[in-house]
Image 1: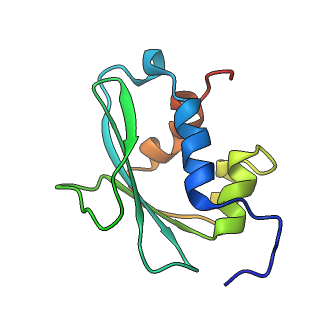
Image 2 (image 1 turned 45 degrees about the horizontal axis):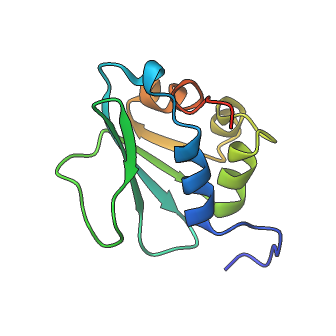
Length: 115
């Protein structure tokens, strides 16, 4: 477990992301993301479909996964708070992307609404 006490709970990070969801930038998208955090056993699934974004409840598995992102809780928090770009994290090996790299690159555009 990460000893960094400044980490926000993962559900808080993802709920913040969903609040920033911009349906206008998600037209015609049908993407299921699987987030694997090295510190945790269970993955997090985020589905963008029909101009909506939602998290799957814990222990529920989607029918398909388009993009698998593997990282740490700390790295994901830095990306969420724009302290680190996803592109830089990928280039530095802090995020691994399996599946569509385009889907990973589209996250900042899909979740760009001002709140």
